[in-house]
Every structure is written in structure tokens, then in C-alpha cells.
Image 1 (cartoon, rainbow, N blue to C red):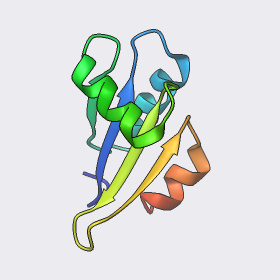
Image 2 (spheres, rainbow, N blue to C red):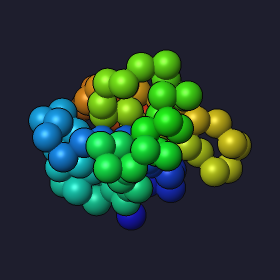
Image 3 (tube, helix red, strand yellow):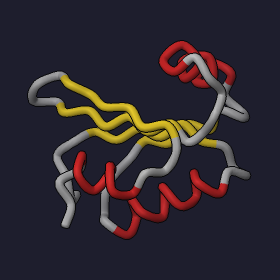
Length: 87
């Protein structure tokens, strides 16, 4: 794994930015948990509670060492590079 952070993405199968984000993670060998909010109402509600909106992708990067997390709505490559300490 390229990072020691936990990555979660809330996505839908038809979302192009979700696909780009997941390709980015795969390219950088970042392990992530993917929740399909189109087919999973529980995770959709969880995402809505966290963000107050229905746009995807929602990406949460958590640091298990200090219990801090950052949320990105959309695919922001530069922000992900910084958060994940990627080159």
C-alpha cells in the first residue's frame, strides 16, 4: 500500500469522476473502500449525513494514528496527492 491512511469513496457506477478517482487510487496503489450509494441506501444516507448533499464522489481520507480525517467532494487530484503524501 502506498499510504498508511484509510481511504473511503462513496460513488455510483455511472459517475465519471468516481471512475477517475478509483483509477487514480489504483495507479498509485492506494487501497480504498468503495461504497456504491446507488445500490446501498444505508451508505447513501451515511454520505448524506456527512455532506448534506448527494454529489459523488465523496472521498474521505482518515489518519488512524491521530483520528483525523479530511473529506473531498469531487475528484481533486492535487488535494489527494497532498493528503496521501504521494509523489
